[in-house]
Image (tube, rainbow, N blue to C red; front, side, top):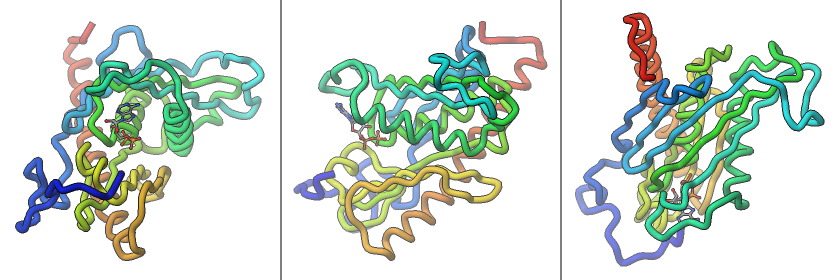
Length: 247
Ligand code: ADP
């Protein structure tokens, strides 16, 4: 998010370097139930981002001092594989992955009916296999499909997408170049049934008008992501009913 480049990120016709208009998201593919050993799982592609989410639980909470006698806790581990970016990422936990794990768990706690499982833990693992900006949104989108796939009771599922600003234009779903050389990035996740915002971050600067435009663009796009999440779960359910499985 340097805000400075000689690169033209949006041309005179309003077209972006990957051929999208300002309000278009990258192609999205979602598949539910891709892992045999997990209680629930999902695979998500958003443009060049490739993300796998696995859910285990509700199960006994470890370490035990984290147990809550009134409800389950949602624990999340977001991890970027060393090979997920072109310059090898140093493996393991860093400040960024701790932050993303925390905000993802907090977003999901808004929809999971945690009060049904006192003392339990619902464990969500997000593995970024390929990264191209927007991985926290892709991870959260995958995690909520994986939770539904695990049969965990929820008020709704959570779609996420970012909007931002590059070359002075408010744009939906920034790619890596737009994220690197743009002026702002605003990832958002919502509860579609109420339009409640459960994740909102901002990196960079925007005017109040641009911010409002970015929010409304991202909220609209979240509803499109939501439809793709539901389709993935419906496909998974119809495959199971037909007696097939991915095992
Ligand atoms: P998000 O992936 O949610 O947009 P960031 O804005 O922090 O999160 O990162 C933007 C992009 O920068 C990532 O998607 C990834 O392509 C790249 N990136 C992030 N961390 C690293 C890293 N440690 N090494 C190389 N590239 C990274």
